[in-house]
Image (tube, rainbow, N blue to C red; front, side, top):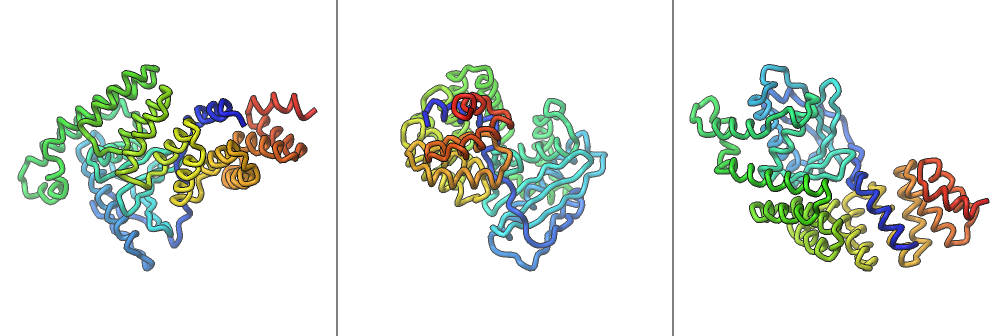
Length: 369
């Protein structure tokens, strides 16, 4: 398989989720008290240390969501109930349901939050990211566009409230008061540089984006997510080795971040280090064995090493999890062709073409008549 084709597919897949679908929960689903009550107690007979820590993180998330809600334009509206369920690996799924709102989030013992259908992750130990998550949850609950929600105004109100020593408010805010010290200005600057970088990146100004990401990193050097974003911009600009450096630094902060591991794998493959790429994807699958794109990429990397039989196993697994993945059918077809299974190759290419893969249609015309 040519590196050119792999690069094109990798670029296309940047538009798709690289993250982890929710692992099926065990045990009964638990209804949470109204989040407006500021209580989020979840009972479970099968509790374990990881689960207990994850639930502590969920309490923190809930407190900030409640606080933001009370300070927002929705303060006079009823806050919906939430649901939670436990995963066997010690993570907790949670969601706040309202008409039209259905985002499902997952938090682990380290305070890392992911959600279905996206590769994005948030570390609630970092206050700006915790605040960002709270805003996202409220936007989903209320079906509000981000442009119509004044996040900065909420922060300013929160800072004002923290400075108020009224006893009735003290209990609500003591748990985050220390972390909020002087964060208003810093948060605003980080957001300014980060938002500018994202805008520049979207407009194709990768050099400008990298400069703005660097300014944000200077203010928040321990944010693996901003490091990851700069790495992505470097990768897009053709600096795969520079991207690897950023991804590696980010993984020094959190070695088990699946998105960054996957990004580093793609960058390593771009430099010709397919074996290193496979090792990174292996780590992703150790974290989440249900990620179809991880199997897809590993199969592609193995194909580049001409390990076609092992690649075929990975493509089979990817399609077992995601049976409508045109790219997986395309590469499985190519792999079957390499293994001299022409009939099987044409069958897979036909399915890929039916699912919209134009390259599969061209190959069918050339080899499957």
